[in-house]
Length: 261
Image (cartoon, rainbow, N blue to C red; front, side, top):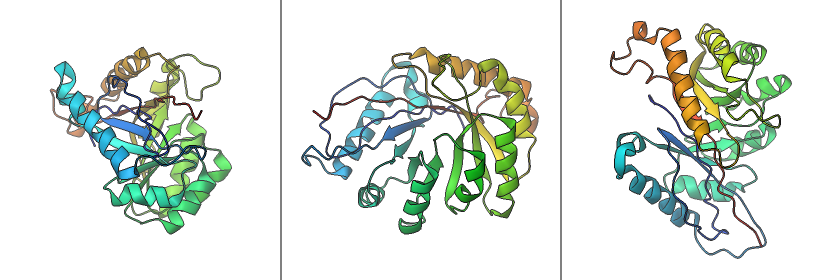
């Protein structure tokens, strides 16, 4: 999907009650987190929670200057630690894209869940687990590339895949020592390196998590996307002249904190 991608972690787990919060500014993809809290009774079904999240995205898309961007939002449900039966319930309700943080958990879920699911890997990836991860046939993207060495390892392991694998560069936009990702200054040379790799992988965009409460992190990522797209001269790749950087997606991981008490 062309355009900027915002990634927002919300809650689809039916064991959480809803807390209303305004959606932050996003451009194309919203990443809704699915969490479990076994101490709480089941109040809402997954399908009801999913409809609630989609309704909030649609409502935000009808408001103000962000209307055009939010109408192109893609929802990715983060399913780490979530039982496969709840993931399948969300899939049966029409959810297609899911994000996982751990290789082993993704391997186990992908072996039993429908092949029509589109898996996105959003956790920190160790080089020695790349080959196992790429054994997932319906893996469509890795969104945490933070070094040339890791990108090269992924490209080398992707030669057997029929589908081109999307790679997103993780950028530390809030200068946090505890967060993964490259600095904004290092993002351009890494993007150039990834873009020049084998035809089995594709530079798809940039991803950031951002510090809690730092809503400006996505704006910094948006500006960085524009600079990188211009530097890579994407106009020569058939991108419309009026949208020279629309091919690079932006992914913004946000958490909606809720208590299990």
